[in-house]
Length: 131
Length: 291
Image (cartoon, rainbow over all chains, first blue to last red; front, side):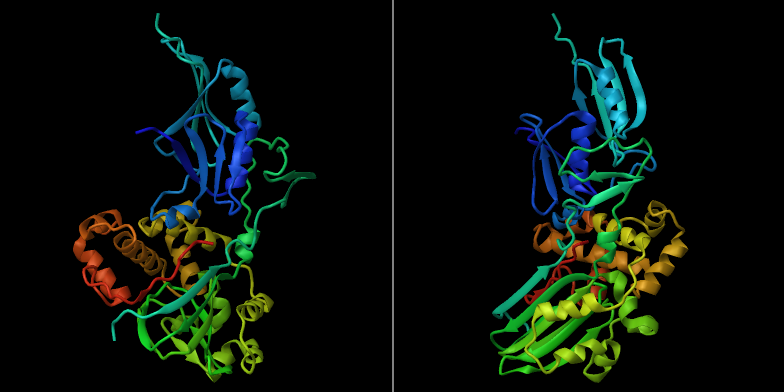
């Protein structure tokens, strides 16, 4: 099977789509007219947002993401050559800082922020392909 | 009488009434438009929740039902109040006004060919605006005729006329009801999103108040305790897990968040009057969407 979507249930789809455009430089693919679903342009695996009301419609029981308290135990990770600039941009658009860019022993620069719903977003440099 | 019947049941959710399209968000003196244009930088630490459109929404759904033949249906409770006009196709201008209190018990409706209902389902937070001082005793009540008109005098204007859902909705929009408590609305939304599985004290924590205060908000505005409301949401979800999700009963009990199968049976008996393994053929499932 192919990993086709990562879908985050959020309080406000249009607001989150706009946020991800501003904070992470993504482009939107579309927002459904119901405002309950939107997709970002992220290549083969689509990052999408669904209105939290849709969780109930889908028969799910979820804990709404919140910036109060600990984050949910998963993250999405964006990879970019210039982590420092991406990190600063994220903060300037309203992300909460969690961990500033730092170089790891394996050569990757890693940083963490939380988005407007409190979800963990990692911004890191690509892992160098082994020789 | 249990049995398949031909129903034409139309429920239109009015929840898309307030879209965020072009709604300007004022931050200090800078206008920021949601999604239509690029955002102007938001200061770090600024949080905003658009409460007003949702909180101003009183109507959860408008619905109508026209019976083609004689029959009977089980209507499941959803903790909400409905404003209904019942009429008959032979006498469309004679109607009986009906107002229901927050429902926690299932009831059976018998009908003949030609019977018609037009209904407004209110958002749960507005039970108090409708029932006012009687909310405490309104649970599972049904007021008909004069008693219903005493509660909502504006209905009288519709009684001698051809009823439309628009006219019925209009009556509700004209009422001078206060905006729902945003904390209560958020709590209701959280309960729905979490399938009624979160303990009330956790819900209270998420909306920054004590469980006791949250309970008071539920009782005074919805007419049910927070726990009863949560159990209703849980019941409806479990029912859909079985009927629509096609889960085996034990799996539905687990995913539904019941302590065990016996608890689920107890919940189904209480709110539905049936057991999970014995669902009636003529259930009417209300659409509980947090809109």
